[in-house]
Image (cartoon, rainbow, N blue to C red; front, side):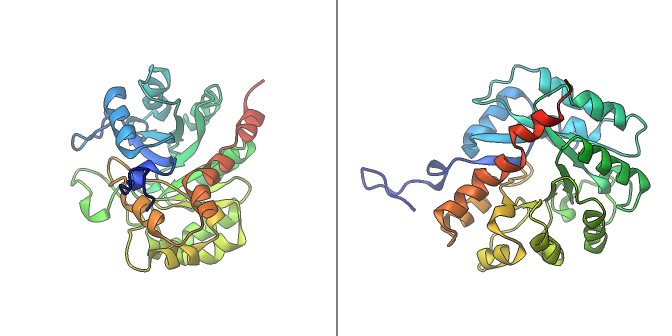
Length: 282
């Protein structure tokens, strides 16, 4: 780690900007978490030293009308050091998802859509999911496929969650719907390893490392999954510890250019202003 002018060792949180693709906020139904309000969210952002983030409000996940759960955060004058972006949770089983998606285009802060199949009760072969993917592709919106909210062993008893996603069906879905950028979020290292051949063949696929637990050979296993240009930084905070993978990345053998791409550049490219402006209503 770098040393400051006074010879002290600088903390890893002081030396690299972060663009977090996977930060949660709002009211989690099962316990109190930081980030329930704009003020406490600002504290989470300050602690994680984020330069930008893409937020997912819990209300958007658990409401029957996801856009209604997102709107209070879109409309709030958040006391944050920057204007955040948002994932719009979409449930293809809800009859109004097309209306939500169309209405979300009015908000420039909506960066893409996010799917939670295990919590919304549909399989990856459901016909409605193909319709959602096609609609997102036509709007040039990235699609975030989320494997879990937190470690499966820690799911609260009242939280309905289907079995973990079979990676063979994930790969089949990606092969059927390759027009839009996809993000694999909150997948484990073992799960991502199954999809590694697909990742290496499609540079339009990305994976965040929010659920990639740091361990001894972490960097080698990350490199085996795909190119550094496909890795984006996601913490899963406040459900997950926000510093674990950052420490591993800072200590890894990735070059300075590769680290910059993982911490900020890859996500900035995927969520490019040009892409979102092109899809915005005239």
